[in-house]
Image (cartoon, rainbow, N blue to C red; front, side, top):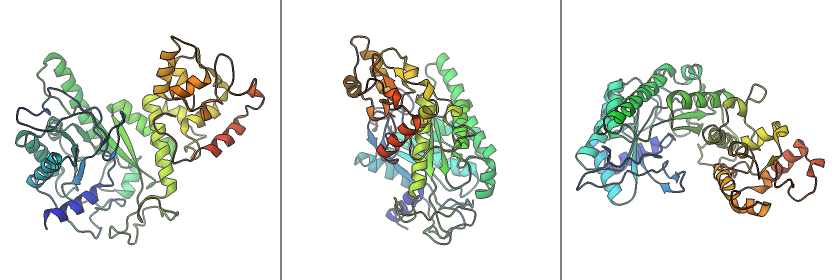
Length: 438
């Protein structure tokens, strides 16, 4: 099989893994920085073909080392029972592809995973070998993200972190029970063990670096993981609680949510595995085997809830509780929270602290900081709020400015949460709501 066919097969097989990101990898003077005569710059970036937090769009060469796999995970197109073409790269081929694509400015980094074609340590060694050759022999200083193969030893994770900018072990499903049903050869305990090994090693390197400045960098962009949404029966509350736990226990940089994509037994739309849910909703918004619109909306809402956890200082229990186990499809989670806690409002913009501003729908983290800074030197009004980035079609229902409500002397006469809910449901399309400022 020629190299072009391998690229087609192994790049296509890697597209279902969403957990590749290069945010926060800049480490001048680290082991990832090329020496004289090398090439590539290791700078903060983002996920493959997507926008970073600072507004940049980057691309990674995103491939599998091999799509040969011994596991039979029901949701995976590469499972052993799937009737699909199998192939593998060699490390030399991947090194050549990465360097040539980078020199031609096709890519800004490499995301490398693999099917489990052998013992986890053997698979992990192949991924490490590729990264090591890129760094030491090719002089490559660009971004590298390697997948941790669950079950591999701590020694392998340690070496991988010396050559890669980010490592990730996918938790796949929210509970061990679902893993046992859909991926019986995988273990939640083993996956969490790999995350914990990374966390321990990262803490050790940070401590060593405080004492010895020459200590090499260890995966400076941290670790991430991926959850598949909709392949199992867990509700959003379970997913958000799990994500919150991962951030807290393992200092996870990012949890990615991937809407379940139906795959047939032949990997191209054949008879689906009976362990999986039937997704028949139309229209499909991706390709013929893509997620349904409903699942994409759910994925989108989970990302917004995740943003509340990481940047808006919400606790998981505030976002969802036993009475509300699913995120609303028609409202972003912050607006839904505000309508359930209407007694918290209105917020007086001229006096509210930053934490309070973050609770207001339509005022994001950046806008909140701008409001704090601006009001130090001049008074605010609704026009200036709009210029600072506030989304007044949502915020207007929850704020006052110098004691005044937007467009009315006393809108509390009509400030019924049910009425506001109807207005906001009419205004917003669920797939178009802003992700970063809401």
